[in-house]
Figure (tube, rainbow, N blue to C red):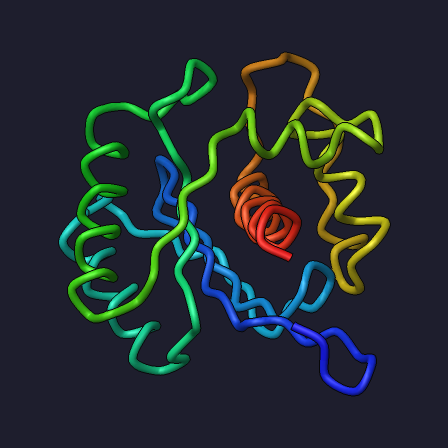
Length: 168
């Protein structure tokens, strides 16, 4: 949407569950992060996460909710994570929010022009282009499957960037 020659973006809430809880970001453009947070929940409880995300929706009232699509071959969520994403999707839709889901493949395609295909390479692009993320960039993992705690924060931002790229 353009207004007087200036691009304006919808406000989105991106949520990325992981094994330790979830990360979320409130964004108002591909490089504008209004709020971001990693939430650790021990023991992990889907009901609590759904309740907390519902509270975020009430607090921020975004224009859309963005989640990961786990139906592609690159999705590595277990049964609990997939069920949580389905429940978050239904909960947001029940409250009247449009929900968009993007796969790891979608994210890789968006970041392809920067030659970023791994989660770490995508995190590097985000750290270089979004203020405040350079200090959050974790050291490059020595093993391909090892993930750092902050990975989910970069994953939630990559979902948001993918949404803006695909819808504007």
